[in-house]
Length: 168
Image 1 (cartoon, rainbow, N blue to C red):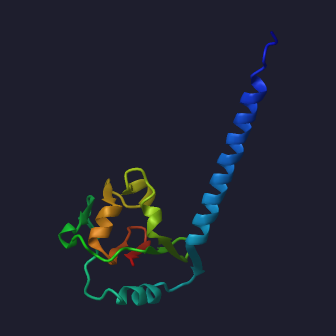
Image 2: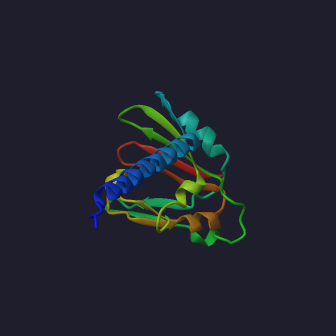
């Protein structure tokens, strides 16, 4: 009775899985890159762009506010506006001003990307945001859907950065 050598079969399966996995990752990156729109503009006066974008939400309070009392920064989420049955969200728009780089960045993300996370939580930690005082924020994609379209965040940070986020 001849002995079969299994290692070529196992090696073939491993190579197949690696090729299929790399292809799936490549397709995923391609699809996401086609869905995300980003522009970077160098400007000396970002206030005109922020005023124009903010004008759509005149009188509207942001869903998330950062309150800084000089000692620490607290995140306040206005959950009183949440209701089921809101129109479905399609995209998140982010406008950010970097004071040091003197660049205005506009980013549009499809809302389905926010749902991809395992828990769905959006987290903003101090090391990522430049906000001091230990702010840690948990807002899920479901919370955003209950809040509906509108102003999500409008804040100025201590180092001069500005961030405006809204949902469609």
